[in-house]
Image (cartoon, rainbow, N blue to C red; front, side):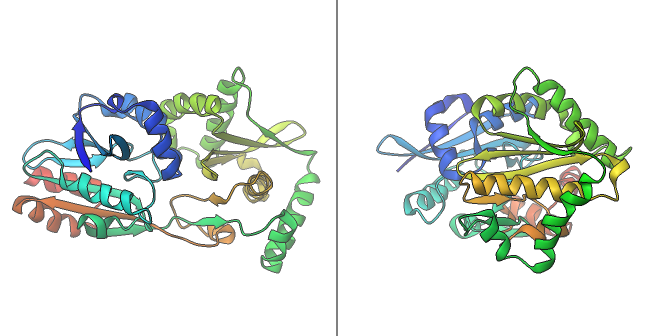
Length: 347
């Protein structure tokens, strides 16, 4: 097993990255997502891309960069912020080669002292166990795993109230106009469809400057690539041809994810969001997806659909006595990045 570090995401061959991100099973591990993130957020910071090879073939990528430089360097995963999952790009730790590669990559970071803030790693990845990382906090990450062959079979295994609402709510909406669903699949129309998505999201949250709106240029660039790759799932719910709800997500490596949404506030008393999400879940099941991911956050509507919650975990990996002191201080503020920044300024 050979570990090397390179200063550029471009140093890893696209075909190798494509193969490993498919094994990681989430779109946030793809080369396209991370290169787009770097274009918008990386600035002039230093990349540290760990590549683990066995017999010359890459088996894991550790995409890091130097987020904080003065004093003790703080490393973070490329993609933090917009990404809903981070971590090594490799097979799950049930693969012994991948597990050994993660351990080797974190042990071989080419810095004499540093702190790695490993955020939003899937709870079933055993990251702390493999690296010796110290657990900081956990976030919800609900998932609906399909164990049924049809939508009707799926509904039969849900609660009575859920079944009734899935059937009744679209009829309730149809009293206001003809209900239809549209999937964005035209590259020429995509800019206008994204205008509609962001407008509905903006209307939903009023004057709030949400993280999704702040990342609009990033998402516009990536959505075009995702459509080209066949990953984009941008659904619209329309009444008499007018979009009143939008659901932005991705389909990758056998799993579909609901990333963000928006709706017409004039219909705030109507179940627009529930109806559109149920439609997207039904389409994913019908098309043979193995699971539907509701992504980060424990909102009640997600729990209604989910069958499990592996969670997302954040760890600190201190390498040196000052870094261990830094980690101890970070625990006092729950390990959140803004709290860490205040601590670093003081130190």
